[in-house]
Length: 196
Ligand SMILES: Cc1cc2nc3c(=O)[nH]c(=O)nc-3n(C[C@H](O)[C@H](O)[C@H](O)COP(=O)(O)O)c2cc1C
Image (cartoon, rainbow, N blue to C red; front, side, top):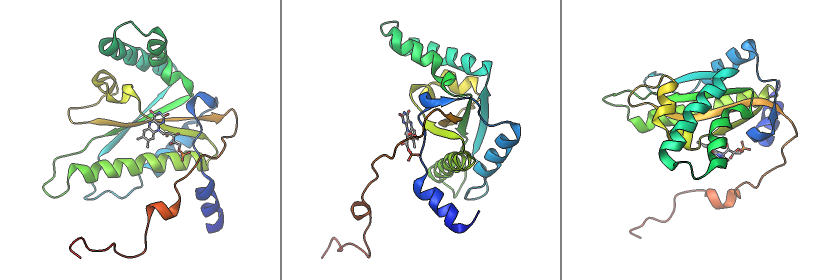
């Protein structure tokens, strides 16, 4: 792929909503490539503060049942629709990759830098999957903050779920969404110094 093709892809890249995904997801060979690219990110101190759990097949319902239990513990039975959505959330795509942040204690490299590196992992994963033609979306939701779900994924104390990366095939092509105007998010040169 030429540089111009890469830039063209990056300029037009879009996520596909998980509810618009159908099978197939990536096979084992594609998954290995996606995860290899995901792990190829800047990582201060080479601490590797991330882990992946690939959730496919029946594991999606198993993890959904844990998310449902967490939902009930938090909200009770008053919202059956939301309870069902919690249970079925991982069934929306054929493949869900849980990206777990596992920051370590380090004398010089703060936790915040390690979490940023995990964000880069998520973005690389998304980009790799989309470049291979898969539909992909980075989601969190309440399940990402439920200790029960983290534990079922093998999480350890101090770990966080950085995202559930949904992968599949687009049932329909996504339309463009509004992007921030560049003029609102950057400037050339330093702003005026506060003290005049
Ligand atoms: C950390 C993180 C968590 C997100 N969680 C959700 C979510 O729970 N629900 C949702 O609708 N979108 C969520 N999003 C946004 C989706 O990924 C959305 O599809 C994305 O903004 C579209 O981006 P794109 O088309 O530029 O790739 C999240 C995004 C990030 C970065």
